[in-house]
Length: 251
Image 1 (spheres, one colour):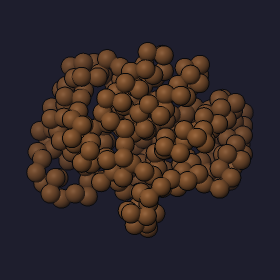
Image 2 (tube, helix red, strand yellow):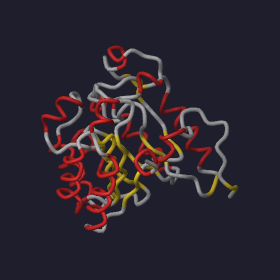
Image 3 (cartoon, helix red, strand yellow):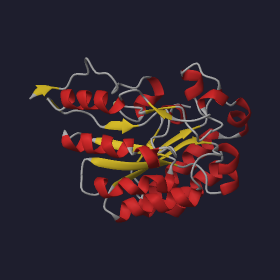
Image 4 (cartoon, helix red, strand yellow):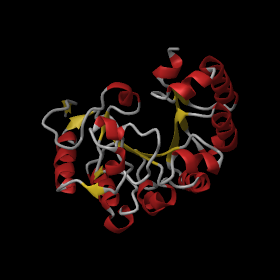
């Protein structure tokens, strides 16, 4: 097989900047997102208003056809990096329960024997597809989670699944033998982040940790050097596998 090259692809792409710390390849099946996270960067990246971007989610035109063409091309190479679903717009929107777009994408990735990972705040909406992931060792399942208190989720992530729903879903994935991970970014409340590690580390195989950016009031109110030391200590104490993102590591 030929060495891996990223060329002539349509909907699978190489993330730039800070996003590249998560995955070398990614794909975003939906336009828009209903989770309405206060800290979301997507509207700005896409030159959309927040009200417009959060109004609903729709699948991109002919996405499955285009995705399969990309997957087929990549299957002809060796050492293809893991593909992440997704950076912009959560893959498990409410409409996904009807469309089952992500389930079909998973089947395509399995068909072409490609590495992939899912990242979602959709909680139990993703449970339907864990049966597929449990049979495929090249898949990982991740959830974005930065809070332990539901009141904080209601304030910052009003449309996302609850804390308990997300934890139950990643616990189910872990019980099924699926490799699990948590994106603990953006950390807003350091104490909740530390408590989260203490609470769920037995069901998490990998952690990625990053602080909030582009919010001066919160950034200036937190001693990030202290937090970095504390979170590294807590993660190390439980022998966790983890990655500290550059924005926190390079302070």
